[in-house]
Length: 171
Image (cartoon, rainbow, N blue to C red):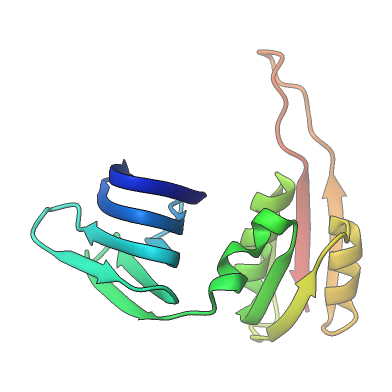
């Protein structure tokens, strides 16, 4: 999520933030092993979940918190790549297919099952603006031995629906 905050304190996913006229993005999904905070503008102090460490970020920096080993890693980042989603863009820089499919699944609200049968690793540099998910998958399939298919959403016994599922095989 992208936050614009005037001044004060905010808590997100067990992290506490001290803010001063700030614009920042937090990527905190339950199924990820890390939480990422990227500062676009202003100043932010991130307090670790255990409360023992405070890290101050400057514009253009990110803080990555590893939920498994509870370590913090601060570094420079291309801010626009991280916040372009708010403008309807998906930007990938040196991104592996697994990362791309995870972001596509979230962006298009589908489940994507990626089967890397070949074991090969590909890295991509791409920007998508108005493309549909099938267009993006077809584009990726032109650069690797990749095949994909769709399983439509299914109504369950409680009248809810599963998400549409995309199965991608890399040969």
